[in-house]
Image (cartoon, rainbow over all chains, first blue to last red; front, side, top):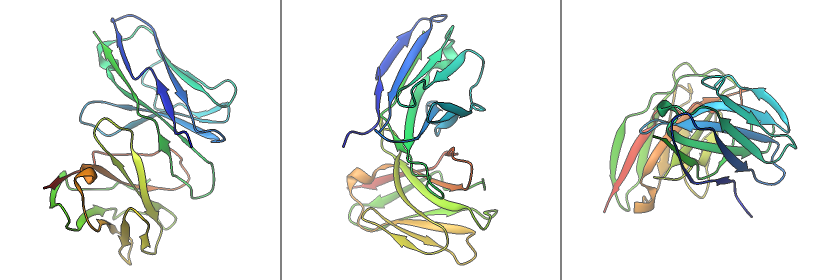
Length: 115
Length: 109
C-alpha cells in the first residue's frame, strides 16, 4: 500500500518568508509525528498528533513553528518568517497506536533551504 | 527514555555479518529496544524491536543481554544496500523517538 508522502520534497525560501510543508500519513494511522533533521544529525522530535489532537508540541523550537491536523489525517507544518537556522530536512511519520508499539513509518522528508 | 550509546562508525565486508552494538545501561524494566536505519536521502526505516528475548525477522536479528544493559543488531549477510546510519532507541510510554547520532555502517565491496 501507499506509504507516508510529503510535499514538496524540496523548498527554497528567502529569509523572512512563510512556508507550509504537507504530510499525508498512511490511511488509518492514528498517530502523526514531525521531526527536524539538521545536516549530519539524527532526527529531532518537533510535535505529535493523535487524530486531530496535538498532544505534544514540546519540540517546536519557537512560536514561528505551527502544526495542524484538522481532520485527523493530512497534517501541515508551517514556519513563519523563516530564518537560516530553519534549514533542515523535515520528516513526517505515522503509526498505528498501540501499547508497546513504537513502529513509525517515515516519509522521504522535505528539504528546506533558507537563503 | 534511557540514553543509548553507539559507536560513531563501522565497516563491514559485503556478504559478512554486520554486528552493531548498543549500550543502554540505564534502561528500565518496561523499556523496549528499537532499531531504525536511515539510508542516505530517505526517511528512517523500522528494523526490529525487543524487550527481553532475542528477536529475528526478515531483516535482522536482535540480541539483548540478560541484564538488558546492551544489545546487538545483526545483519546476517550484509549487502551494499545495508549502508546506512543505524539508530538504537530505548522507549516506553512516551511515543516520540529520540534518535541520537547512531552508527554509520559502511558495507565494503
